Length: 640
Image (cartoon, rainbow, N blue to C red; front, side, top):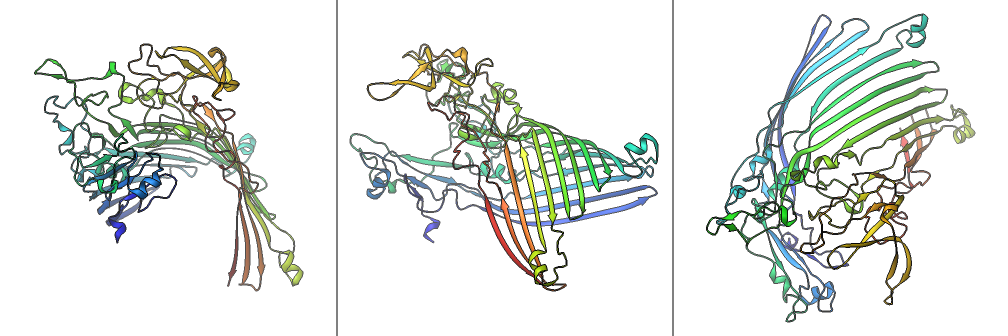
């Protein structure tokens, strides 16, 4: 239909017309799989082995702006909607993707394993095995999936490997060993009988390695990127002649592709990308106690290595760090076609790499009472720490100022600076599950029995630490155009900020406290109280301004994820009334309450240190509307 070719039309304050710009997109896959597992018993050894082969033939449409999009802007005294009605561009733009967004990420995937379960004694069992996996290279069906590096473009012809066919190396060494031990000694008397008991305790420990597979977006983002495709854009400009921007703006949707050059942006894959792997280990015991109680305690740990992350392969940098090649004809650096980046004649380079890492250590204890005497209860507590240098492939931080890359690009040595507490860390977490059944009139005899009998209440109550988050500087203080962080003063007053005041040369002349207003200017603008930065906890760094004589590139001393939101308290309840009609027929009336006591559950904090706001810094984002709320669901079911 018409929506298949209609570009997305956007203007401020209204829902866009047409389908979303990333449609159509989708995937179909035909999977041909062979699996087999064999088990053989040799005395007290049980040996298992197996193989899993997958041939996948698929077709995928990458989320590219195939139909195009036209964004109308305000201008000439008219809103963007007014300019849309009269077909003026204002300050808007029109763009379209050119290239083939449809590709075939087919693959061969192989997995095989062998495992031996050895019953060494009646008390001791040892399990050991190894697994091998090959996940294929589905992105190598693209013409140019791999990032080709920097400083390899001819400064005169501007040609290089950036637009040539290439491939990502295959990862063929994914061997994953595993070992586990379970020991259940037995004592009938003495201190051993008291502590361990007769067949009432089991000790266990284990270690294994596992590999992550490649996911669709790795190939999809590369398929929609230069040089596999390119975006052509027309920008409407407001001038004296055209105060409302480009007239007949809807006719300006590009119809021809912009040539791919070294300055074209790219989102590609590191040539040596491999499958991330995780090491996991644990040790613990389980003890059966009186009163139908089972105690379980363990230590668990894991380490993620070569995890997926986006890296800025050619970051924006200050003039002193830009590397501009020499024109052989003049012996001088080239002066045209510059990107103001590390490689000054190549454009933006977002690279999918294995630069991520994580480490987890946790102590866990759980006590559970089996169902009896009309109730069952389980209590669990975890004390843990999760360290990482990024928490998600596409973004390393959340809240008001998440960033897609390290605060200082890895190519400039910044990766280790972001290794800190993970945003998914929950130092303390306690949970309780319980079921209580009414002991009265369980047989439900007579009318009174059916009314008063058959009640049950169950629930889960959870307490956990808040969400760690990062405080961002807000100004680009280092000239790298990233989300830098302010200076941290450990002796400063908790939560207090000092925002710099600079002169025309960008020299810091003083600091103000944005929380304290001491007056207003004749124009009504607030006047903020001066502050000694030595008394503030967060000292904001001024923006780096190219050409300003007093401007200095600075990087803050504050670490990542140093703050934490308030903790979470949550209870989910289920109320059940079962009314029996006969031996095989009954009616269940159920009410499910999520966040039954309507407690706030915030996911982030206001974290921009340079904002001139009062009472919001470090406080929950949207405290009156976010954090969820009580939800109740009702259900009636007749079982026969």
